[in-house]
Image (cartoon, rainbow, N blue to C red; front, side, top):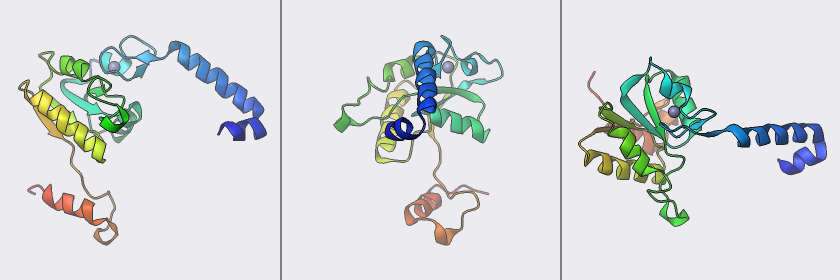
Amino acid sequence: MAFHLLQRDRSGAAQLAQTLGGALAVVRHCDKCNTFSEQQVCELCRSARRDQTLLCVVETPADLLMMEQAQCYRGQYFVLMGRLSPLDGIGPREIHLDRLVRRATDGVVKEVILATNFTVEGEATAHYVSDVLRAKSLRVSRIARGLPVGGELEHVDSGTLAQAVIERREV
Ligand SMILES: [Zn+2]
């Protein structure tokens, strides 16, 4: 991208540099949910319309945005800013586990929903976090894997289909 901008779009590059520089100066992490915010506590965390008893754990601010766009969830969030990956030196400290535990044990949160990715690291992270939170007597759930909306069985990979069968629910 840098090469492309330098060669073809130098004014665009200057604009991007200025925007990034501005963001670096003002964007920080929300004290409550850890996502990017220009304020100490972000707008979502301050909203009185959100369910304070639900806390959804995601890996990145982009995942939080996806959840919001799906309009299926009205609780609060905690953003790990990563996932456990011991080989890359990313442990419980790097995903701010101590802050998550403090946030989840504020006495108001009743259920923690783990919405980390269904990758090896995401699954390991969900497993580890759920062990820690369950030890604090919190109710912990994991989002379900399933078939894509509009998907046809014959075009879905066997792993996804198998998980959908395992995680079936009564109708
Ligand atoms: Zn926040």
